[in-house]
Length: 247
Image (cartoon, rainbow, N blue to C red):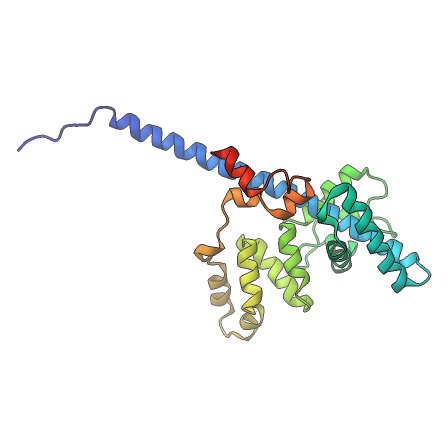
C-alpha cells in the first residue's frame, strides 16, 4: 500500500490560514467596536440636544407655538452647519428621546435596577445633569447608559407601551440583537406574544436566534447613514466612494 505523500508547504499554508483568520476577526471586531463607540457618543449627544430643546421649550411663554418655531429655526441653522442629520423630524426625535429617557431613568439599567456606575453622577443635582463636569465627560458618562445604536433607539421611540419598550431594549442588549432583528421583533409583536405565552423562557430563547437577514457585516455598521451624517461624511463617503476606494 502506497504511503500518502505530504504536500510541500501544506503545514505552512494551514498556519497562514490560521493567522489570516485571526487577523480578519480582529479587524472585524475593531470595526464593530469603532462604529459602536461613535454610535454611543452620538446617542449621548442627541440626548443632550433633546434636553436643551425641552428646557428651552418649557421657558417659552406660548409653549406649542414657541416649540414649533424653535425646531424650525434650529433645523435651518444646524442644517447649514452640520447637514441633513438635523432636520426638523430628527430634532423632534431627539426631543422625544430625552422625554422618554429622563435623567432619573438613565441612572438605571433597562431592567430597572439601579446602576452603581459613573452614570449615577448624572442625577446628583436637582436640576438635571452633570453641572460640575465638563461637556466631554458628560458625553462619556451618558454614553455608557446608551449601549444600543441610535437607529435602534429610533425604532424604540415608535413603541408607545413603556413596558414593551423596556422589554425590547433589555432583550436587544441581552441577546445582542442587530437593529434589523430589533425591528423584526417589534413588528412581530414579540413582547405581546411573550406575555401571552405559557412558556416565556422558551419564547425568549427563540427570540435570541438571529435570522440570516438579521446579521450585519462590520462594513455596514461603519456605513450606517446616521453615523456618516453625524460625522459629516454622508456625501463624501457614499457607498460608491467607499467601494471604489476599497477596490
